[in-house]
Every structure is written in structure tokens, then in C-alpha cells.
Length: 233
Image 1 (cartoon, rainbow, N blue to C red):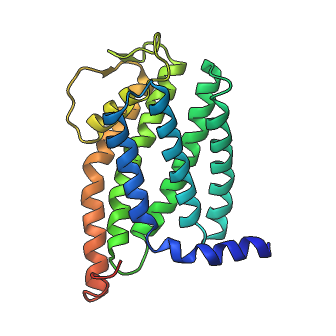
Image 2 (spheres, rainbow, N blue to C red; image 1 turned 90 degrees about the horizontal axis):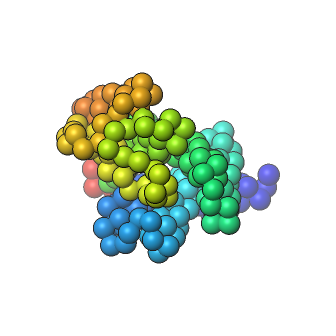
């Protein structure tokens, strides 16, 4: 217990910039790596797994000041990391499903922790604003994992997308998720199964409401703080 407390104390300085670091990691994971490498290549998969590991470790640092959340996200992150890297030894469909489930659980818990920092009381800082943007991207990543999981368990759940040839290709679900989140809707991939349609409707609704809710919360915090904290990191 004393060791955990010492670790929390040492991680305290890192929490001040954790949201900015999280945003950078998500931008690299979602926008940079798929652009410079093929998602099904060994290099692309390694980079994605490394970035996912760093994101989960960042979540541990973010949650160090909250005992309950720290225990939950520590357990989920540990399980997710073990499953992700064990997937290199057991690349079967079942392992892909377990990997996605473990990653999804860890990212959902990370989203809860980030949400507490974004919407909790306090001054409006650069770190909080970065956390709000990171949380928006995290929503897209979580839904991409959910779509991927549905496609594994419900064949033909999406028209225009298939896992028959390259089941490891995760970029297609990132693409579909952000198209849905931003309500662009190109129509090249269409949800067909009820579960896929429900997830798509919910994500589109969040994509519409989230910016308004975040803006209203940040304005209320700024007004409550009398304009203080705007120049703090």
C-alpha cells in the first residue's frame, strides 16, 4: 500500500500535462500511423499496439489521484496489455475478439477518468481543453472497437465491410466510426444488423451533443472562476 502511495506521489507532476500527452497519442494513433503505414502490416500493428500501451499507461497516471478509479483502470489496463501483446503469439479469431473486449473495457474506463477531469470542478486550463478534445477522439476509438466486435460476432452486420480476408484490419472501423461521429455519412459502409444500427445511432447522437455540452461546461467553469486559470497549463 505504501508503495502504491509513493508511486502516486511521484506521478503527481505528470498529471498536469497528462491530457495534452493523451491528445498527442490519440492523434498519432488515429490520424498519423494509419497514414504512414498500412494497418495490416507488421510495422503498423506494432505502432498501434505501442501507442495503445502508452495511452493506457497515461490513463494510469491520470487516475493516480483517485483510489477507486485507479484500481479499476489498473486492472483493466493490465489485462488489456497482456491480451494485446499475447495476441502476437495466438493470432486467432477468438484471440482477436478477446483482445478487442479487453481493450474496449480499458478504454471505457479511461474515458470515465478523462470525463471526470474534463467536466469536474476547477479552472479552465489548456490541459482540460486538451482532455475535452482527447475525450471526443476517444469516443470515436471506443465505438470503432465496438463496431469491430459486432462485426466479429455478427457476420454481415455491416454492408460494404468484411473480415473474410483481413480480420486484423482495424482502420476501416476507425474510419466508419469517425464518419458516424461527425455525421458525415458517406454511405460506403452501412449498418445492417440491429446492434450495428443502434450503436451508429447512439454515436451520431453523441457526436451532435458532445461539442455543445463541452462548450457549455467550459463556459460555466470560466464564469464561475471569474476568468482565472485561462493561462495555466
